[in-house]
Image (cartoon, rainbow, N blue to C red; front, top):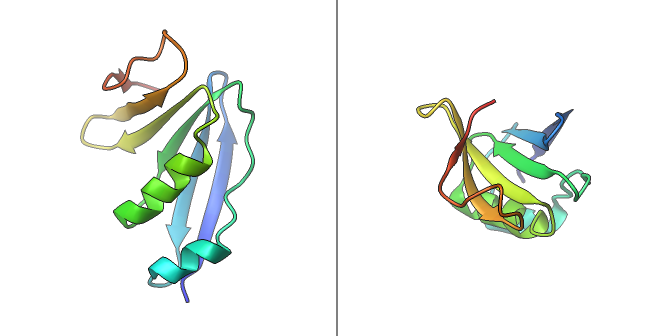
Length: 96
């Protein structure tokens, strides 16, 4: 059974949720993962190496937040993938 460790860093406009896996994750592990709660008035940036279905799970969990972005080290920023605010456009790169 996989184990996911979350780290939370509060920034002015968003909460950075980083994660690490200490073991191989299997889909059944999703039922046991409890992502950290965040302030929904801010955005969320997700960062970590994991399977695409884990990112989908986290995106669904954080859907009510202002925006969701995923960090991409090649772009040196986070790509906005979901937004409830006109100031954060889907597909734009959020540098921080």
